[in-house]
Length: 125
Image 1 (tube, rainbow, N blue to C red):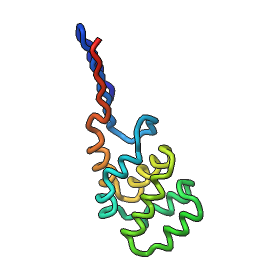
Image 2 (tube, rainbow, N blue to C red):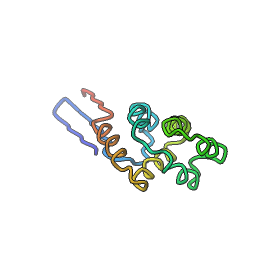
Image 3 (tube, one colour):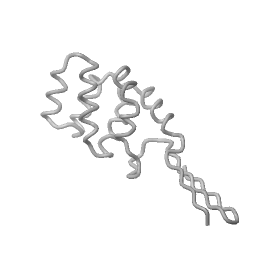
Image 4 (tube, rainbow, N blue to C red):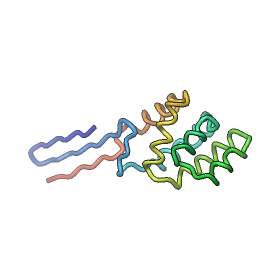
């Protein structure tokens, strides 16, 4: 959502992020960092890793390490660490796969909290 107010001597621009789209201005790694504990406590990474491998988000060596990790919170921590090094487009796929793996509530919580005005820029002209 983009809101633009133009008063006599004041220009206010508000940019809100209401959904996950591959917006180059969005720092998706910040979303993961901001919600790290929530994700570790609630994410079932075992449901995601096959999707992420098949869509080339994680490479074979990363996939093997994830499959080898049997303790779910540790697997999730490893996955989040891997995702932090990926491109915004690949992290967007992670959010998409949350919906496909019956974890849409996790995606919704993150989106809701980030949907507040992420960038607020004001200039006086």
